[in-house]
Each structure stands twice: as C-alpha cells, then as structure tokens.
Image (cartoon, rainbow, N blue to C red; front, side, top):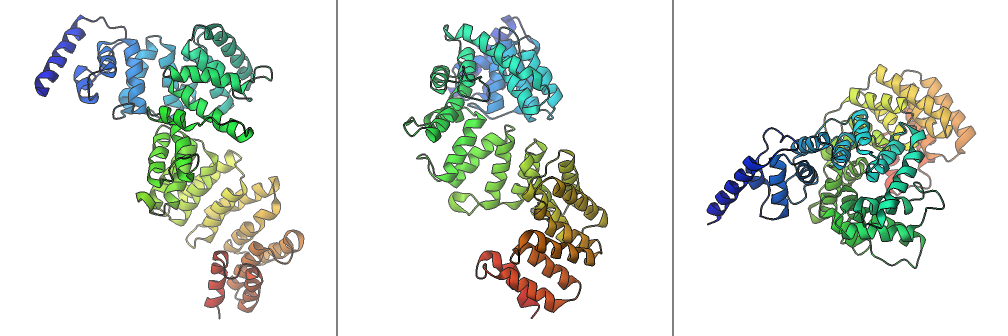
Amino acid sequence: MRVLATVCVVGLALGALAAGAAAARTPPGFDVFDCVMRVSRAGPMLETCYAAARGDAAGAHKFGRALMQGDGMTRDLPMAVALLRRAAEAGLPAAALDLARAHQRGLGVPRDVEEAARWFRRAATDDYPRGKFELAVFLDGTRIADGEVVDLMRQAYRAARAKVAGEDVDALYVVGAIRTNDEYAPPYQFNPEDGMKLLRRAAQRGDVEAASRLGVALVEARRSDARATEDPLPWFRQAAARGEPVACLMLARMSGAGGARASADSARARLLYHCAAEQGIAVAMHELADHYLSGDGSDGALTDVAAARQWYFRAFEAGYEHAAGPAGAMAAAGRGGPRDEAAAVAVLQRMIELKIFDAADLRNLAAALAEHPETGRGALEVARAAVEEAGKRRDAYLWVPALAWIHFRLGDGAKAEAMLRAGLARFGGADNMDLRRTLGDVLHGLGRVAEARAEWQRALRGIEGTLGGLPLQRRLDLTK
C-alpha cells in the first residue's frame, strides 16, 4: 500500500508539473522525485517542494531555506543555494536576503563578502524593510560602508512601523529587533519591553529569527533586571528545532554550563554547537573547537584534538579573530595533525595584516613557533617582527619573554639575557614567573646550568605543588 501511495503521489505531482507555468526555472537535477525522497511525509512541506519543482519562486525560496537549515529534512547546501538563487533572480527580496547570508557565511558557496553585499542590496527594496535592516546589520559588522548604516536603520524602521498594525511578520521583526538593541536604536526608539512584545508576536506567527532574538532579549533582560522572570529557553527551543543557528548557539552555551534549567549534557551541547557552526556562525565554530579540546568523555563528548584544530581554522577563516592564536599554535606545534609551519606563519602574517594584537593569542602563537626545535629562521623572523609590533601597541611587558626567546633561537643569547634582566628590573619585580622562567631557559641554553636552576627556583616560589609549577619542577629534576 505504501508503494502504491507513493506512486500515486508522484503521478499527481507529475501532472501538476506538466500543467504549471514556471515563474522561476527549476534548478537542474531537482524534480518531484526529489520531493518524495527528501520529504518523509505528506503535508505543507511536501506541497512546498512540489511548488519549487514546478518553478514557483515562493516555493523555491521556502524549500531552499528549509534545505539550508535542515528544517525537517537532511541539509543540502548546494541545492539550497540553487533554489534560493532561482527565487532571488525571479525578484523575491526575501530569497535574495537568504542568498546573501549564504555568501556571507560560506554555505554551499565560497565565502564572498562582496557577493554577499550585492545580494543584501538586492534584498533592501523599499517594500521589504527587513532587507534594509539586514543590510544595515551586515554593513555595520563588516565596516564596508559605515555612513550608510544609520540611514538604512532609519529607513527600515520607518517602513516597518507603517506595516506593524497589519501584523506583517517582517515589520514586527524589524521594529522589535531595533527596539531591543541599543546599538541599533536611537535613545528615543530603544524600548526593550515594547520590542519584546513585537518579537513575540512575530515568533508566534512562525518567524524563527524573531523567536531567537526574543530569547536573546530575555537573557539580557534577566541580566539587567532582577524582576524579569520570563524564561528564554522555550523560544530558543522553538527556533533551534527548525535549525535557527543563533538559537542553537545559545542552547549549546546553556547546555554546556547547565544553566537556566538546561541539562548539563555535553553531547547535546556539542550537537547544538554543530548546528550553529555548520551554518557559518564563526563564534560557534570557535566554541565548538573549545568543546572538542576540553571534552571529558561525559555523555560521549570525547576530546578530539584534530577536530578542534579543524574548527579553529574554520573559525579564523570565517573572520573570528580570537581563533587565530589557537589555530596557528596548533599548526606550529603539530597538535591535532601534522606540524605545518607554513600555515602557522600564514596565520601570524594575517594577524599582523589585520592588526590582531590580542596579547594571549599572538604570544601563544609566537611562542609555539619559537619553542619548536624545527622552526626555521624565516618563521622566527616573522614571529619576531609580529611580537615587536605588538609590543609597541599595548602592554610591552607582556611580550618580553616571547621576544627574548625568539632572539635566543635566532642565535643572540646575550641580547635575550639582557632583555629579560631589563624586563625584571623595569616591569616584573623580583617574582615575575614568566620572566624568571624564560631567563632560566636562556641561561640553560647558554650552558650556565647553576644560574638557570636558581632562576627556575625563584620562578617556582608561590606555585610549587600546583599544576603551573610542574614544568618548572621538571626542569629542576632534569638538571640535578
């Protein structure tokens, strides 16, 4: 009977396909047979798929978006992009917006900010305020055209306000999003309570992004106002159930921390991080890498250093600056895969180009290159230049140990020693552990073992018996 029913459904759909006039050409390789294979049961989504197969632009957009998010079916990014492109080229601004996000996040197509900007602008029509709002958010995040952002936000707000009374979902979303975010709204428009009401109305009408934004707004409200009691979890769950990536990320954070009544379920958190990371959310990629690196085996969430390295690199390539240090350091040390000095140096050079001078990230990467015995002179010179440049910009004392060790590796032990002693006199006082430890390492490398041991012993004071003291104690044990 099930086979017969399937044959009948396909036969009816083929008849509809022959009778329907196409408003947007169907992508090659997509037909009603795809619908039967992709959608598990009859219902609205199957009808949407048939409409997409007939060439209907609205159907192509809706089904393409479902394929993009894995909403009730297996994700298929290339086919999703093809359907969204057909709908966008047929003139649907909402499809152009989703296609812009695909290019922005690298979903089914190479990441391309300029192509994303082109489609965001196609979406920003006068009668689609959501397109103008999302273009403003995109430009604000990429700093492509700062001067446009305020004007676009104003236009989006005015156009959406005119449609709110008619319960237009996009209008409810835009006005609600602006009123709940003080970065978007001028002071006279910032009204979180009213904004959350509008987002709630949009979410109740099935807008998953509104549900996700409402959840975020409720989290912020509970942080700032002890009287705020509404639980954000139901809204995040509603949105995450349909694959909305920000909701997945927020639930992952809550699951990992065991907060807000969510179960401390590491395996569940990892799946949710994947939901967000695989949809191009760069911060989720970084946090997923952290999760792989710190997995303790509970609930099946095992440590996977290779996966951590992969996701750190993907996060950095997606534009998340804080992933640069861990990605490059793992490549430099050969952690989670073969040692790749060229990749580590490329990351370091990219950090300099982008002026990413985060102290911990850059120091860790430079140190990973300097400490590995196989690092070549060219890589050491790049590391030296990066650390010197960073030291000019912030907290010069933080860079002394790394820079001194690089000079030692480049063959100038005397300069390294002088730099460390000057650092102790100028910055660290007698008990600066990092300076003392590095001075001991340099002295040991120069063959002055007794002096090296004295510096290591002074560095060990105060942390003896702790995990931080183990490397120093090992040095002392090996040089007895």
